[in-house]
Amino acid sequence: MILFRFLPVAALFWTSLVLADWPQWRGPDRTGYVESQQLIESLPTDGLAPLWKFEAFPGGGSGGWSSPAISDGRVYLYSHTKTKNAGADPGESKYPWLPPEKRVGMSDEEYAEYEVKRRDENERQARAFRFDERMVCLDLGSGEIVWDKTVESTYTRFVQSGTPCVAGGRVFVLGAERTARCYDAETGEVLWSRRLPGDFRDEFFASSFVVDSDMAMVACGPIVALSTEDGKVQWQGDAPLDYQSHSSPAIWRAGDESIAIVNTSGGATQAYRVSDGEKLWEISGGAGQSTPIVAGDVLLVYGSSRKNGLTAFSLSPEGPEKTPQQIWQFQRAADSGSTPVVRGDSVFVQGEKRLAKVRLSDGETLWQTTLNISNPRYTSLIAAGDQLFYGWEGLHAFNADGDDFEQLYEARVDSEGMLIADDDLRAKLGLDELAREDGLEKSEKLWQQKAVHSGPLNCSTPALSDGRMVIRLRNAVVCYDLRL
Image (cartoon, rainbow, N blue to C red):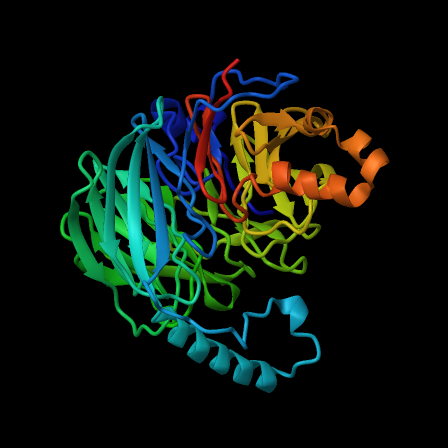
């Protein structure tokens, strides 16, 4: 029998109770959860107006998929942008990037040859553009700019998309060309910039920093630990330097020691002592690009195939060097990069259109449903108080309590920035009447214009603090006050 322990709920969420912030990727303790006062369970018929909207902040291929961070009443946003040089002509693309479903019929050798041509073409086209990295600090209550800083950058195959990490009055982010930067959280001054080990051509890394004491850690191939003071490399892991890591490290506190846990190449998960970088163990849990979760002395890793699924391991606080032992495995969901949520003794996991609630202690499925959305991936769930949220195409809110599935509302962000329930927006736009008079094609076109294209940025994840949710849209950032 495998013995493991859970911290009481009050102890498990001590950080959230003290901070009530979302200062890094996956929230205050990287479980995707934050304590919250009671939130609204339905929306006004005419929609919920935004508290504020920050315009002209492009995302996706024009600015990346970084998620917001919230700390001490401020919102921190990062983008990696490209601007066409005057008079430059990038030329036509003959070799666009092919998603897996469009590689059917190509052998591995043919696809590798195609990728060489695509990368060569992309690098030629990149000369027609200027690349910059932008960090913006906004006031959470008003959306007004506190500071806005831009540094010149370089081309990467996909734009950099790590989420800022705010700790100790500083903001840490991994930028293009393996360059880590540290900003003063109050002024935006760049305190230091550090080129991390490894060659660079056009590689991109979407990992986000985690900070423990005087160490800032991020996955850039291997996990790398930097001094928060000056950015000097203190130690690095043994994963391949060319592994394009998008998983972010998590911290496990075993007694008086801090252990950094990171998913890395080949589905491996590694643990390193933060103080000196000693590698304690490595397991093959089939982890994907998701971030590992530590809940008490339980480790959760989530894979990109249902064969690996979501796996729970027991950690030994009395002997942190002991190899974790598998407790249970949930194989009914998988995702390319989303990370589950832990709230008390519940784990919420999304994979493709599937959403499930699983018991943390034994892996038993409490409920599972299929979401009415199209081809989701990379965007992660978040939870606040007794509600669960998913920001894909719109904002989906669920009851996080109980053993039965309950959706509270399914909303869209319309072209005016209103957060409005699907049915109410359809009525507001008169889609049913339009479909009867002019056909479904016009009705669908209007829906795309007014509801889909104005919605959340795919692959970015909302952040929530003090009942206020910040969502990155395709070309803007919006904040809603969800307090009851």
